[in-house]
Image 1 (cartoon, helix red, strand yellow):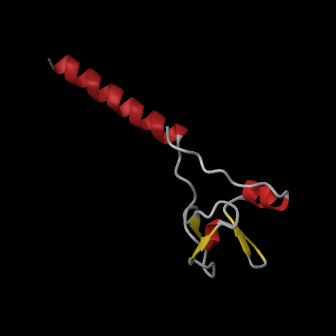
Image 2 (cartoon, helix red, strand yellow; image 1 turned 30 degrees about the horizontal axis):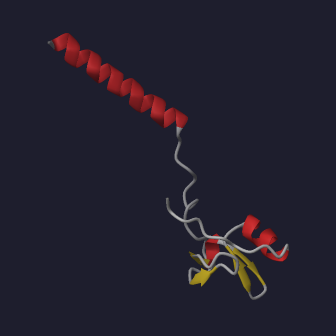
Length: 85
């Protein structure tokens, strides 16, 4: 019985070390706004999704979730929401 418990503990320890090595933590503050960045919620001018301003792209008075929405907006494309199946 001791052997089974010991083997399980060794496997758990090796798994924990492997996970820490394969998936290190991002740098401190990576997922948060930097000092001075605005955190007010804004609506994307392309998809109407609400997002904090520091997470998107501000272009004059326009706001976009990401680069793709910005380029699609300027290309004149229309956003079509995905319908759940």
